[in-house]
Image (cartoon, rainbow, N blue to C red):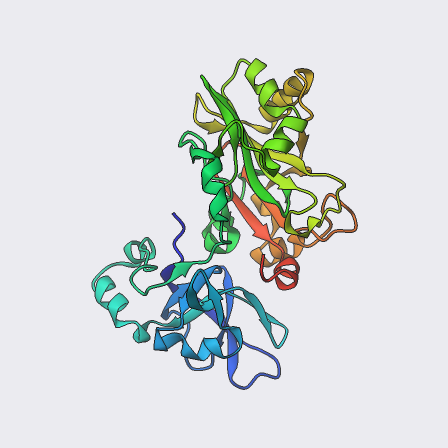
Length: 348
């Protein structure tokens, strides 16, 4: 479960050119614009991640409502997004811990590691912003995505800055992160089906996920394959996030194959082999663009990674959402989202 509100420490402060009232605070890997004087280096803060929805009813958030107040899901408040102040990128929100005595009371006497593991989302009444799912979709689903399939997505590198120093020789496969809808197609025993990020659709459902899976022959090929597999990737194309790749029809693009029997992600070599096998069984199985395997140290600092995330996508005329990294030995993954993309697509 994603922790939207956590207690973290300010690791550095730097001035913002031509700004008298604000400065840039680094909170672990995140750069946040904060009021001058709110923090000293080493101070604890309450950090609100992107997609936090802060309610208007809490007077501590009143100053944020002036230009960004909105209605969402029957609530009024502000959604935390990537913003730019005086040419300084700001991702998330850092507020002084002293303004939240209910949090201070809970962490009193605890060490930093224990505090960092805690989630204060409910404590301060923050809600996770999500695109509203139309009510009619509930009539088309068999249930939630099977628990033997992992959730798609990955931790942002800014949330795990220690990884860069702790695992310099770890090998990671780099791929382009596509701006689409999460989609999984799977076969396990008698179970076989298509899911979006959360729901397993009924076989007779007619929607963009099911139509695309059928057109590319994904389910039928999986039924013929001897392994229990989950194909996980992105649905992209017309009608999906403004079709940034400028496709003529929707496509499923694979970025991961999950070995269900052994509960692990297939290695790049295994994935490439299985992709070929499924194609031989009739699937038009497309993949995202895999750009290489690198030691973490070769990717440089966090700022280097963020700069690297800028670039073109599958379509050379499209600026990509960012890059995704899977550990070759299967121990983990993370994503690096392009700041240019975030500024241009603040509602994404």
